[in-house]
Length: 464
Ligand code: PLP
View (cartoon, rainbow, N blue to C red):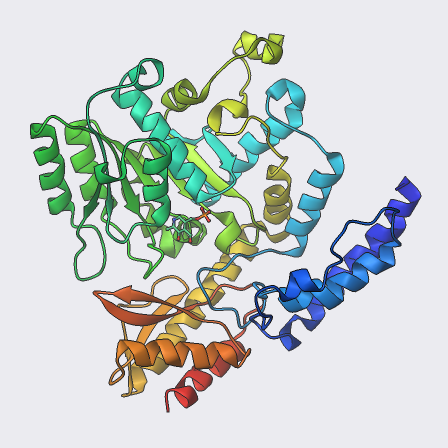
């Protein structure tokens, strides 16, 4: 593809995406294809000769779009949002176009320095504690952030022994029983043994019981275990419960345990001064992460991960083969982000966040978050006012959890299936205290009051 052909087809692709954005609202939120439909529509063998670009665009319309769940649809209320936006898409395009691989400072200084700088901007926008400034790194996901935090925590707890010789002690990790499954995955990947993930019970609001944590850590220490890390959640996946980070930090301090705070969804709420309470206790955390790719208008994938002291992280992850040696790294004056993550290579991801922060500014980001918080509060007031429904917990951030009062779990699952089958909106469920609960997660950039109202009316109709 020559630059001139790229210019022409690039414009066609941007036009195609802009058209897609404009017609998004008319598409079903959830794909209705059956398993195998997409593959059956594709030719069994790759083309021998190159094909016209127009044929690829046609297949996007005919084969790909029908097989999509429209995550950017204004009536997408499932899971947590996975925002994208014009500036994010364009930043990503530039990243792809430049084709830079930023494993070392020396392999593209701008890739490293822009990332450090943009993450400092984000830290300032979210009012993160000083200890995280200059110590941010972009991971692909919160799952990777948790894994890296665990590897760093283990490095610190074993003074590097675990990497050199392995350890015989039992290394334990703690998280509430509402924590994201990525904690269990990290424990498995790190080879600590799933039984050494100790799930701490929660209180009536689904937040970690810090006294139970204190007891469990003390018992494990008495039994000869080495507690390595506690993961506190600020905004659990099920219900956005917020663990009591200051009380958890007390326990960690008592036993010298690494405190990782997983604020994958809710961390970006701190862009609004009135929501900065989500940062309580962070000044005592060893690491923290949030996903601008969830609720901050930045397309997947971009997790912002911060550590208070990078020494344990780089100690855990630095392996230096001869072919990566270079004068800049040896000068000690630069950051090599390959030592802050699992893979060696890395994309120029900070561009999309940089584009987003510059396009929206702090005010635009606040408006985005506040709009969803206000819509969630309004939906909660409607639920509250309808005697047939009940709220499960207070609405927090953009999430509302609800139940129909006289409906059993199977009835809720059936109700959810009926609502989603209409194609008009998409909701998901979780369980709270063993009961099925419906989740309405408001967070798409295109969502307006009328979309939330339509989903609520649909729910009421389908509830019978
Ligand atoms: N932690 C929490 C609290 C989450 O809600 C999620 C995803 O929803 C994750 C971690 C995992 O995020 P990722 O897909 O970035 O690994």
